[in-house]
Image (cartoon, rainbow over all chains, first blue to last red):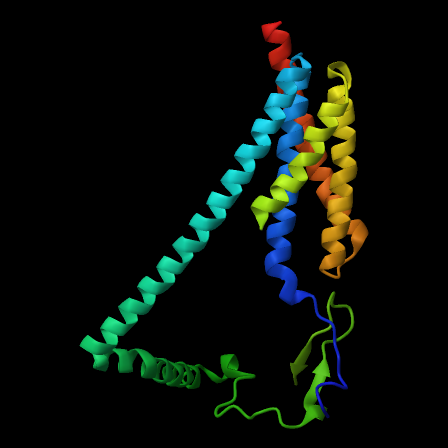
Length: 154
Length: 82
C-alpha cells in the first residue's frame, strides 16, 4: 500500500514548538498581569502601574530569549562533550569499549543462569530457553476487573 | 519562540492597564487575563489535538491562583506602607 493512500494526522511532531509557545504566552500573561495587579493593589498611580507592566514585559521577553539560548547551548555542549569522550575512549581503549558493548550480552546470560538455579516452586512461569509468542491465540487479555486491559502470555 | 510569545502574552495586560483608570486596573486586568488565559489554553490544546476544555481550565486555574496571590501580596504592602 502506498503512503499517499494512508494519510494519518498526528500532532506529536508539534510538541516542541507548541510547548515553547504555550510556556512563553502563559508566562507573559500571568507574570505581567500579576505584576500589574500587585502594583495596582498596593495603591499606585496609573503611571507606576504602566511602568511596572512595561518593565515586566521587556525584562521577561529578554529573560526568555536568554534562558532559551543558554539552556539549548548547555545541552549541546553536554552532548558534544559526551561524544568527544566516547571518541577518545574508542581511540585509546578499544578493548574496554568492546567489553562495554558485549558485556550486556554476557549479563543477560548470567540472569538466565541464576533463574535456572531457582528452586522449582519459584521457577514457575520462567521457561528457558524462552519460547517466542508466535501463536496469536496464546495471547489472552487479563481477567475482567482490572482498571486497564493488558495483554499477557498465558 | 518563547520570548516572542511571552511578549505577545504580556502585551495584553499592559494594553488593558493603559486603557483603564488606575482605580479599576486590578479587576479589569485580572478579568481580561483570565479570558486571555482561557483562550490560550484552548488554542494550545487545539493545536496539540487534545481536549479544549481540559487545557483551558488548567491554564485558567493556575493563572488565577498566581494573580490572586500576587494581588494579596500587593494589598499587604499597600496596607503596611500606606
